[in-house]
Image 1 (cartoon, rainbow, N blue to C red):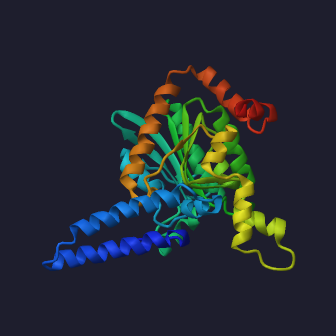
Image 2: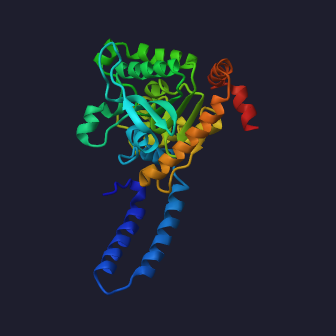
Length: 328
């Protein structure tokens, strides 16, 4: 059963009507094929109209959609012979981060990404994609292994943020994230990153120091969630609501389109009509094509030049004059 967001209610009503007509047509002598075709055309037009005019808050809701493909879905659809590696060799294994090696054809890749979990039981097990320090250390361990064997690294970013619990802080959450940033900036192998859903705060940034960073069309990437931002700025003795969240989402400029304009990401990957959750196979195909295209470009660059470009890429973020020149 498809989960519909509030702004998708007109789509839900039309799809329900089409399904009812299909059942009537299959179970009787009435030919409703022409009416079904007409409604399908109307449905496509409705989807185009709705998804061409989404607000930042609506895109945030899509980024969090429970049926959206997660890291393990992309791994199973893109890579062959995936072998998951566990543990950070210091404390334990963190299920919120998936790390391992796989192949596309004869080419090997190291894959590191957040995993939220599909069912309630799995979400609790995966801690809703909120990684502990051992998750970031596990991811970095696999990246360093990739560097040793000259294997490109692929990161999949999809987290509300790093886990802020007492245990995580005691085991060095900030240090683990900072070390990821430092080590990835100097990693002597190509790194390609994909924001596939939520890119929340330092928990997302820890896996985002890449040579190429791409975002799915309806993903988000921000220093704070709209809810967190609204609570800090506008909670004055009362509760903040959806209108405040929507305002915060607009002000944060967290959409893929905004971040492409600012030069923080390299490109936006268009999603199937209705969002990535509507067609896992198709979005995985698009991510795979973008990955292979980026890797072919990056692999041709000498290592020292690659590291220099990676450094300069992040030094330019937030540079007023660079943004001004880019816009003009």
